[in-house]
Amino acid sequence: MPDIAPPASTSTTMPSTAASAEVMGRASPPPARMAAAQPAATLVGAGSAVRTSTAGTATAAPAAPSAAGSGSTLDVSGAPPGWSFRAGFGRPDTTAAPPTSREQTELPLEPVPAVRAAAPLLQPHFGPVGRARPPLLVSLLAIVTLGVYALVWHQRMNRELEEFDPKLHSRPLRSALALAVPWLAGMLVTLAGAALIVGGRLSLHLPLASHVSPLQSYLMLGGLAVVPYLTLLLPISLIAVVMTLERLRCVEEHVGTTTDRQVRPVGATLLLAVPVVGGLVLLAAEQARLNAVWDAVAPSGRPSP
Image 1 (tube, rainbow, N blue to C red):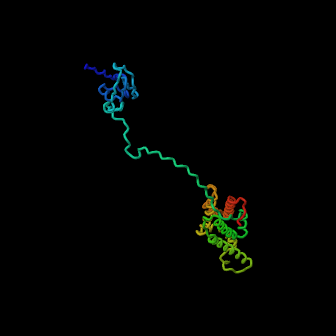
Image 2: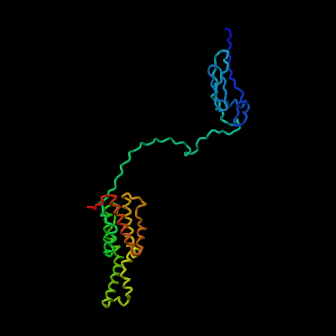
C-alpha cells in the first residue's frame, strides 16, 4: 500500500509584541514570558492568527489557508487569562480579593412591599362644649363681686374642661378651694381695715385700734389687691393656677391648635406679679382662649345643652 503523506499542519503565527504591546508605560517582556500570558484562542477551520490589542481584547486575524484546506483546533484552555499582571510581569496580582467581612458583601435586593391603604384617621371624641363668655365681662364681674365670681368661674372652667376632654382629670372644687385660701386672707385684711375706719368714726373701742394708725387702716383696705401675690407665695394656690393653665393647653392641643399659639402655663402665671391688674388680665386671657376652643369645635358658639 503506498504511503499517504499526512496533511500539512496549520501553523499559528504570533506577531511580535515587542514593538506593538506596552503595559502601563513599560516595554513588553521577552517573548519567552509573553508566550505564557497569551489569551486563550480557538482556531476552527481555516487557520488564523491571534492578535492582542493594547486594550486587552483578542481579535482573530485571517491567515493564509493551508495546503490541505482543513484546519485543526488549538486547545489553550489551560493558559491563564491575558493581561492579568501576574508575577511573570514583575507586579503583584491586581485581581480584586473576595470580601473578608459580612459588611462588604453585596446583599440581595429585597422586594418592595406593596403599598397598603392608609387607615382612616380617627376623629377625637369630645364631650359637650362649654359656655362662651365675654372676657372683659369676666374681669368686670370679678371686680364687682370682690373676687367671689373669680372663684366660681375657676371652678366652672375646670369642670367644663374635664367634661369636654375625656382624657383630662381634674378636681374643680379642690382647685377652687386652693385659690380661696389667699382670697380669704386678703378679704380678712380688707374687712379689718374697714372696721377700724368705721370704729374710729363712731368712736368705738376695737381691740386693734390702739395698734393701728388711721393711715394703716386705709392701707388695709387694699388687702384684696395682694391676693395675686399671696397666690404666688402659697404652693397649693400656685399649683392650682398652673395646672388649670396646663389643662387648657392640653385641650388646645387636642383641638388642633399649633404649639406656637398654645398657652404657656408658666409665662401666663407670671401675670399675677403685675400689680393690681395682673390677675384681671389673666382671667380675661383664659376666657378668650376658652372661647377659641369652643369655636374650633362648634363654630356657632352655642352653649352645651
